[in-house]
Length: 202
Image 1 (cartoon, helix red, strand yellow):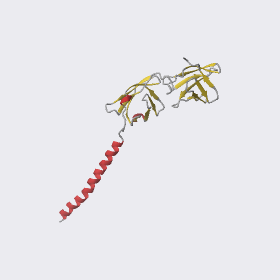
Image 2: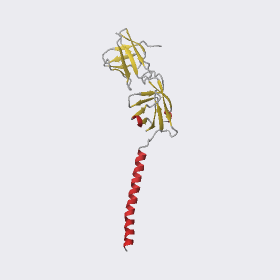
Image 3: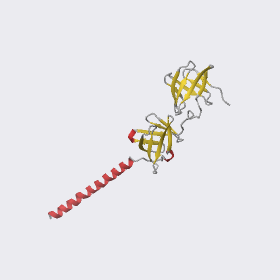
């Protein structure tokens, strides 16, 4: 009688334990699956990129999601595509946002990678580099290889450094000035009330 009772008790206790184990396993698998990169493919990003004019590289694995990036110093780190326009590099604690055209990656550490070694300027395609004029006096802008950062010199020969924002504004922090480029690319209206122009080239 006692033996039968022990068997029945063991069976009754065993069933909930098995169910609990199965539920735990299901939760564990689901959580592990949730950590995997999801959606999108990085296949189109494979190849050479540039940071400040120096070559970098993205190597995309056959699965289209796992990637290895190599910076301009030859240092490599593994990561994955987490969506069609997002890259994650866990070892560096950064992620990168790919623009719609797939030609630029903006990393969360403040750097940018581009497909071209010499980007002509803001996304409008206008080349800002060269001579400009304020009231007939010569000024100049020289855009760097990354297509965003530039050096600038005003009519008094005062140099400065700045950058082009995603919306196409020119920011010169040391001057406390912001410039807005005209649609035809021939005039810059600065926040201090001045304007720079250049002759149209035909």
